[in-house]
Figure 1 (cartoon, rainbow, N blue to C red):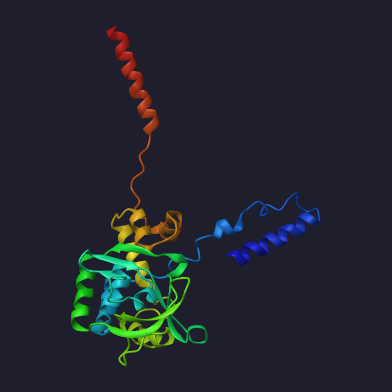
Figure 2 (cartoon, rainbow, N blue to C red):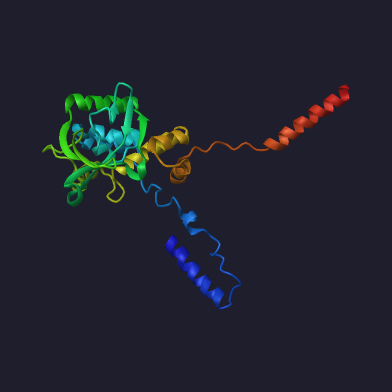
Length: 268
């Protein structure tokens, strides 16, 4: 859309220069503001049935990963960085601390490393009751895997051991390509679309399910850890509940005040 707008603006600017029109009507428009948020609008969101279809296709050892996406709105990098540690999980208090994401950069950090979540969206989230149970079941059944990596979440990157919840069958962390190989098989088996059927669709599912069920948008913002409420509203505006707009509020109030004044005048 922005491409078409820029093309139209160029044509009208030329017409203005040639004196054909008095001004370029596109000139005053703040194009960045007009198109802000459109790129983040979900292109596809799975239904409840489609999420269940995906769960049926995914091995049980990765069910908790899907629930962290669908139930808590976590991004895939945040899920793959989840540790069996109070630093990330406090099952007793029912809290999820999203403080890091897993990345792979062999030249700079020698392989896997941890960094802050996207846009600095660190936050503590109250765990959904079922997600809490699924994560606890995962830890009892599959445990965690100690992996040596670089922690770059602070100003001083340093090597340490992380007890990751999710690794592959050879006990290795997932980088993008390795995860994609698994995800493609699961996605295709579940009948999800190729183009937009990514793990991120679970995050959109989380947000839109909460909004359409009447959850306060501010709570949705905090769950997704967006930098601002306007960003959340722009991204998911079409899923906001549409309550019937009250009409004649001001005129009704003034008429009531007038009738009350008239009754006082008659009584006096």
